[in-house]
Length: 421
Ligand SMILES: *Cc1c(COP(=O)(O)O)cnc(C)c1O
Image (cartoon, rainbow, N blue to C red; front, top):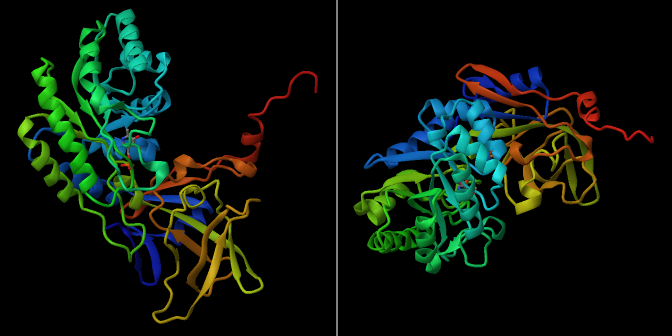
């Protein structure tokens, strides 16, 4: 459920007509709903209320500080995957002891920054990284709280580019090798083992792959405790999928996910951490774009938008589907016809949808891409020297620009010419 609904024939973000935002800020523009962000965070928080837990929002999904602050004020922690994300989370006021640091290639500089600024735990992804964290911590005279990310070798049954839990993926340590790695971790002077971490992929639409992975984590917890390790925290990653179309089968709800976690892991008495990104931000954001031209071709009609693949890369990168809806509600029963919906970038991949049934639209009409809040703005680029588009946050009847559109001058002036030119 989200808060982007038609009211009196107008698509609204909470209580604000989307057309009003487009008129004030211009298009293309990302628009987020505070109520939807909070609703999704709370669904997870409540689903884990049976025990001690922390919901660490995977901020790579949508990392604007206004979004981070909205969630942090509601009690969220953050899952970060780079020094830049760590700095952003801190700038948004998230305390270090609510930040977990994931990612396969943490540099020594990033490790140092996090240790100096405060960190809840590092999720270790390899043995060399484990040694590096211990060394940096020892240099600083501190002890780094760590979990080891284990790769449970389960098939997440999701798109190949977002599956991470099979043995051929680059993530984590093979679960069969975990006891050996934990033994080394316990022996290293700069580390304190606090738990186990697992994350098997993104946009999972069934609970079974999670349950299979978590069963393996439960077995490993018992084995590691038997080896003398104190396992007090289980970080279960993110990955719960969202409905991208109204028609397809509904993915499991957070409440079902939380109940499954209790069934599989509740008896272990551990604090549970989860790292949802997509489910918190995905349906909390839309991308609003204007039709530049209706191009009538041979056998197909193109809607050419002012948004392009550099603004929303998911269709080009993951063959992802986004529902695209007119901002002015079409009259019921209005005839629809197929359109190819494309952006202006010089790549055939700059196609958002092919043969999509839409009501008659033309130049100047506004459309909204639904479910664009996660892995949308954060993956945008300036390809074709197109400016990063603005982000707007809505709360009730208020809206604010939370990232403004840069001028071309700002973009161009980041280049510097060598003295020989
Ligand atoms: C990307 C990622 C997440 C978030 O995944 P979602 O599918 O957005 O919930 C969580 N944890 C780790 C380690 C990740 O890399």
